[in-house]
Amino acid sequence: MLQSKLFYKANKNKTGNAESVSHDLLVRAGYVDQLMAGVYSFLPLGFKVLKNIEGIIRKNMEMIDGQELLLPSLHPKENWVRTGRWDSLDVLFKLPGAGDKEYALGSTHEEVVAPLAKKVIFSYKDLPLHVFQIQTKFRNELRAKSGILRTREFIMKDLYSFYTNQEDFDVYYEKAAKAYEKIFKECGIGKITYRTLASGGTFSKYSDEFQTITDAGEDLIYVCTRCSLAINKEIKAETLKCTACNNAEFEEKKAVEVGNIFKLGTKFSTPFDLKFTDRDGHDKPVLMGCYGIGLSRLMGAIVEASHDEKGIIWPESVAPFKVHLVSLPGAKVKTAAAKLYKSLQSAGIQVLWDERENKNPGEKFAESDLLGIPLRVVVSEKTLEKNSVELKERAKDLMKLVKVKDILKHV
Image (tube, rainbow, N blue to C red; front, side, top):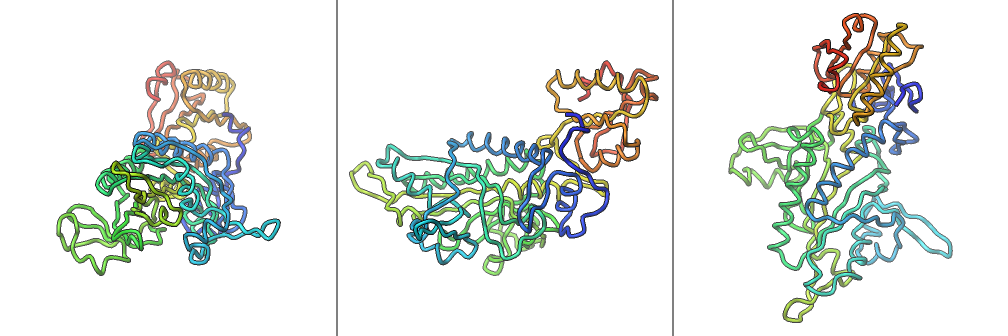
């Protein structure tokens, strides 16, 4: 991609209304644009990051037998009335329609997936079943804040599992938790993301949140100093000791929730009469579980965790490009850089080439740091004197000269 053709606009000045580091950097670097409070456009750079995160999540959901589908965003009022959430869920967007019909914009999809599963599940032979989607959700948040960390429109992965018995369901639940840990590790935030005990509400005694440590977080969690199990503030009063190692010492940390998993039980199968016939011919309610990850929030959390005073530092796994090729002024430079650009592309390496001639070297380097692409390759008259280019990792200060003929070995 030629940087002169890229649909974005970088800004060296801090965003005036930014409430978090990720909000400031993602807007300034041209990854996202705010349309209104809680609603963002993902520009080409941001969309690339989002699709990379999506790919990591999809791969891991398929590895635990998830089948991908796509459910509607527009839901009939009747389904939400049936579960009692039409009036009780305060963040639900409600819409009037033709013929005095009323609809909801999907904030979650239990009211859609349960009646859908009823059309497929009849016998114990049809179970277990696991389906997931990556879908836009809508929540009428009282106060959208912190950029893409809390929005009214967002992209979310939700997986739903259907089981005949608690024992098999519990095994899968732990399997899903491990998959979540793997996802956050692959996204570069595994070391600061904690599986956190939270209230299960009416579903179960506990649910599990996955909380990433950041100063912009709205949640307080308590991390066991011995085994690193975490507990959400809402249940800390009743959990004086770590449930894993019995330790009583915890460290308080601010965090943002990037995922959660729930044992729904029969909460949503009962209203829709979602049953299966067991081996003895008896009808029993299906046990359900749900497993969510907010992709856009996860993207913000990655920036919160990986940045410096100059800008973003993307983990390679989610970065929009692997290499930022920067060419400085000079007659021979553009020719050499163009050749290098083509060779990197031919090798299947995602590369953004800053070939702009209206920017001085200082401006180019500052913008490169702001964008946060993992590797920067600089071509200049000075480096070409030694048949070399300058190679620098975004996360490190050290720069080194690499022979042009050897650059592919290094990137």
